[in-house]
Length: 129
Image (tube, helix red, strand yellow):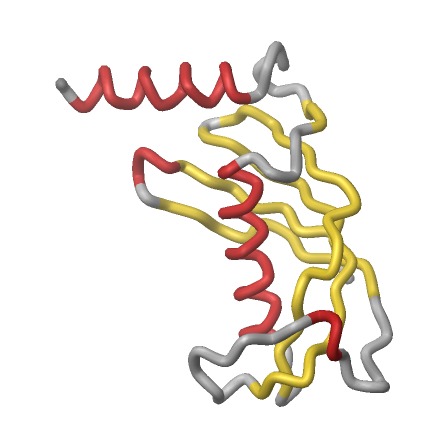
């Protein structure tokens, strides 16, 4: 399959996944969608690498998930975040939201993530907490 057809296939698949949304329009999307989950994992990792805290932050709840079909897919995620008891430098540590430290006050973030899966490219466009 040529590269052009691969791009067309990915875009058509994305359009079908967004179920009837118009190109350029922002539409609500299921938080369990694979694209949403990939964008969420990426956003949380970027959020953790961008703060100076010794402890990892974790998504406690996805409040709202939206998608916009652009030159790729732009995911707009409203997420409740919490501080965990897991240190950033411990690899393969399981952080459980149920065993939060006492100072784990939840806070809300809005992440805008742009994904172009056919280029294997994902970027954080905006982060507001």
